[in-house]
Length: 442
Image (cartoon, rainbow, N blue to C red; front, side):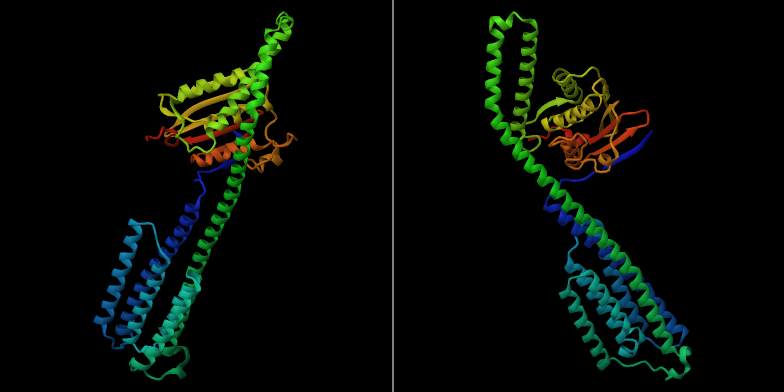
């Protein structure tokens, strides 16, 4: 049971495709709204035609009008099937869909009174949707087309033989039709513009997230370039120090001093560790995952990692539990190794006496859990966990370890969950899809 938690969900790496996918998803949602609206329009027109013809006794060319509705239904069904079997929707398709709707409305109005039909105001609904869904040139085009349609109906269509009963007020058939048209148009505009606005808000929120991710990944790139350059520069002084320490160890005056000899051995071990880190940075710089990875297994990978970490850190007790089960071949990735070491290093700094590492499997997910007995995450750090330079250590560059962990998890399609434990200490749980760890075939 935990009192606080911060989770970063499954995300994909940021590139130009993210922005394009986001735009396509928005267009797909708009197309679904139009398809739904068109089905409602077909049903509404069918009811209106039947009620007008049979209820009010107005003679209408039923066969022709129902044929137009059937054609519109086929067009809408084709749109719906296309959306089920492919995901890409283009802006021109939205424009063409609204154009077909306008053509169908014009045909129905031509057969039922033309410009004198009160439902002529449904043109406003289509132009309003175009203004919300499409760019200005498309919206103005539909505005012009609707104007031309109205003028054509006014000149060519025959008005219905209805009594001039406007003096009856709301009891007038014409005014009742206008009222129904007004209510229908207003209701549809409210419902669908609210939905479309919600879709646009989701689109804008996604774009803001992508921009934030771009800024973070640019920061990571800069750090990677600096790390690569520093690794090149550190190679020579580390080699020089290693040679000097070797000479000191062979000096009789120092070789006969057990304490000094022990210190020299410890310094040589730390120099070797630094050289290993530098080699790992140089090996990883600029390479795509899997290009230089060797083949290993889950159990072998963690046994080697734990053994190396124990021998290069001053830890009193590292409790390692491997509950993964049946072993699995994966790529031995230095980035993943450094990510887990960052988690262990942070836990060791908070809890020098005891650190726990537990590995287990949940369906197709690898779960890595690191626990310490330290003071836990401070609230000001916890609120911004995973962002760069969020730390209470008070030294330059601190707070980058978890930032890199969160970003590596995101790139691999995993999640990171951090929490403070009720019994004291902190817990970090890293969940990674096993498919992302597999060794990719050439």
